[in-house]
Length: 247
Image (cartoon, rainbow, N blue to C red; front, side):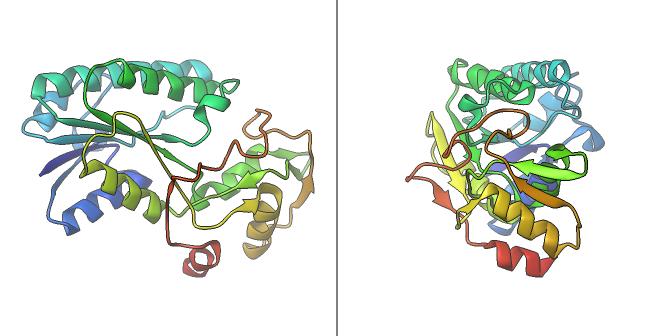
């Protein structure tokens, strides 16, 4: 089947295109650098022609709240409109575990708008909620650094490798629409502060990680289970140890 991957040249998108191709599907990477722009609609109708599935793994180029809200609102509206005109039978979007509990974050408000537009569109859909990627552990440390020290709460954390994210999204994309949320996560749970501490040490990063019950995640207070999926989640296979060994 023809699957159009919006954001198909990025970290997850490029891996997803490869995996779908390996399973015999016609995977089309759609992004500004391939002539497809979901904000202006440039090249979008043409890319979606004949597609059975569209998968949106794109992301806002800016994390400023206004920019994020504008990006996900405009992009998703345009995608849904063009997908409906093209007769696409399954609309899939990648989102984040805990989105509904992180509404104090401007970024997650943008993701919530994306999800609401999809749910209310009347189109057959699947929203994939993934836990955080191993590849972004350093970014977590960076936005949690205060005066050279990393402050993080000791909450549960279940990150996954980008390869497993792509595999999970691909599995949903070639299946029947769930018209709801499918959660995916890593195979292991950790404490957020402990994982970041160990990951920084493995990479030779000298920053000290401070266990801080009052610290937030992306500027938002989280509870014990905000960042981990429920019991029915699909779990990846790549462990932290395996991922670090690949780096």
